[in-house]
Length: 301
Figure 1 (cartoon, rainbow, N blue to C red):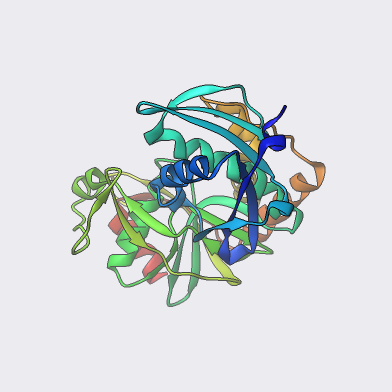
Figure 2 (cartoon, rainbow, N blue to C red):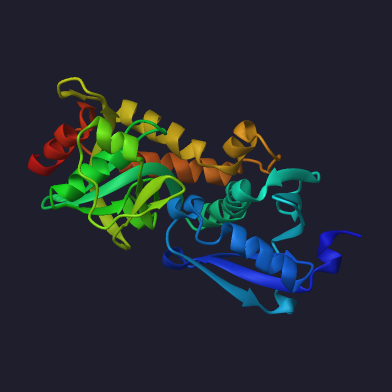
């Protein structure tokens, strides 16, 4: 008997700004509350747009079902449905990463069907428009976003941008900053800040349907500021690699805990390619320097 046959409690987890939701099934209310307590509000969810969690009608059916059992400080977990895994053991404190990966494995393909793609990027609104800053983890997106915030710009995203037709449809809900990065680049901490999972969190601004006017690929370092203009073709290639890296199949290749059932649909590849072309706006740049230098470049251009 699969977990789908024993579901008694259902929850709808939604990306509010994108009107996208995933229904998760549980065997009991206790199991539902256990999972919700582990994952909702956790730092891993801050990389997504604002999330809503509500109970769903049993007739809805589940996209993902869970069997979860507490064992001391650990959980024994098994996913069923769109994400199917063997039973595995994981510390309860780290389970939220797995849950949101499973959530995205359902949500991202559904969004691609609607022509909305996810790019690993920050987005800053300046007096001259919205600047997209794509890059891998460690490129310094969050540090540049925070430095831009200190300059008076509005941070629309610091980690994940949802885009369609060259427009920003939504960004992640919280800009999170590693205190070590602030110290390394002499950036002041925000007033009244608190640490959650070792990181400082600052809310981003909600946005929908905002055109992206500039493209800067940040490379944060302590070196003097240097910029290099790249061709539109090179920008499209970097963006396509970035977009493809957010697809569930990429998560399947790098995931250390459980396999994510995912394939790349041909139509999804075309959507990502079109989005890369739409985002490769005129005069794309690679900018290397401190967060403050790159933020100043973005402000004055």
